[in-house]
Length: 364
Image (cartoon, rainbow, N blue to C red; front, side):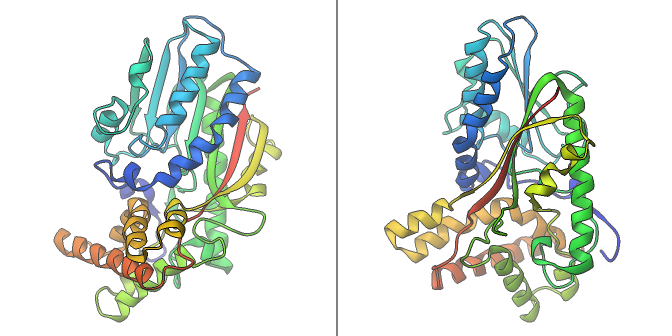
């Protein structure tokens, strides 16, 4: 990749066929535990009971499964305030997303319980549009929602020579990622401000760096991102992949601090009012379960798929395009097999605790 930029849209998608929602139950816990923030915002300024549709987006929705409970609660609250109002739900993610599975999940065609049959006058749509762009027409959005997604930047500004993630880098490399992250975050908020109706809400539950310096998978135990880098380098040392492929493996992500999250609003670059902001740590459900059952092999088998559900495209993208698809698949299976073996051998301290910054903003 050298000094050129890799565009996230070109390769990124959550693992398909329902794998994401089945494996990533922690992301669902994050949403379910914070739905009250959105309901409180709706109660402060209830939607009028008229025939103008209430439009909600789920940006960075993956397969739509993790947000089913939240969307159900929000639409029920809207109907409480406005019984005759039509409801329009728009799911948005990158073009490579498995939209077929998304619609099957949302319409109750899988084992997951959906909200779709609860409501009349409900219209469900999808948009294969990055949240770095405007998704709906200006002034048409009542509630923009995104969780565990907007840490993805539009493009990787440069390679990370000795690691895979900016949160574990330093110096000019970290500065380059932070600059790209600041640019993309300001643009993200500007897009939402343009989409919102006056008085509309945007609720964002974002991976970040909290006041203690903690971030995803780095809350005092075994560092998830350090483990990613160590095992990927081991595959270099064992002759499985090349050092060039290691260097080409870069997470297109930026974890921001609270000050960085609120900066575009505080600086007046975005026409939004910040109504609420806080950080929370949601414990890894698989690590919690391990504390009860004590089976290290079971923990490893249950835990590693939640890492794979979102990180796999990054590792695949790092591999040389000259490799066959079968060869790439075998290498990826071996990599996650090594992670599972590492957890099974020494399970203590492993776990992907979710560190989020929760924001609720409103358009004046």
